[in-house]
Image (cartoon, rainbow, N blue to C red; front, side, top):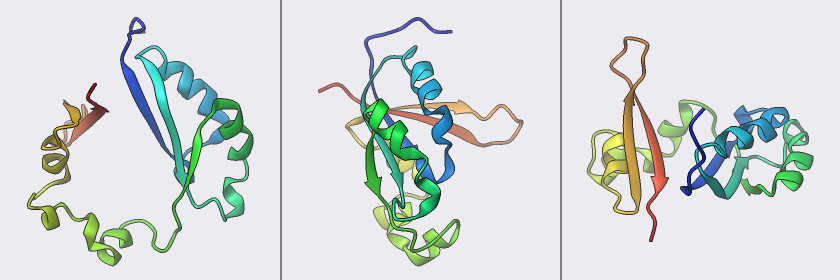
Length: 126
C-alpha cells in the first residue's frame, strides 16, 4: 500500500455501473493516495436501480450529478457525436486529455498484453 500523500484527488463515480456497497472501501483505498477533495457520482437518479446509493452519497459527502440515460453503451458515440475527440482535432481521447493544461496525465500499459493504455488523470494544483 502506498504511503498517504498530500495530493488532492477528484473521485468521479459512474453510479450506473458501480456498487454503492463498496463506496466506503473505495474511498478508504483512495485515501492512501491522497485526499479526496471532490466527490461526484454520475447516474440517472430518476431510475429505481440507483436508490441504494442514497445513504452512501449522504454518509460519504458525494455529490450526485444527474445524467439522463437517453442512450446506452456504444450508442452514445453514435447518438451524440460531440463526445468524439475528432470534433476537437484529435484522433484519440487520450490525445485530447493530454493536451489539457489543467490536467496531469500518466499512461500505464494495460498489462494484459494488449496495446491498450490506462490513463490516470488528476487536476493540476493551481
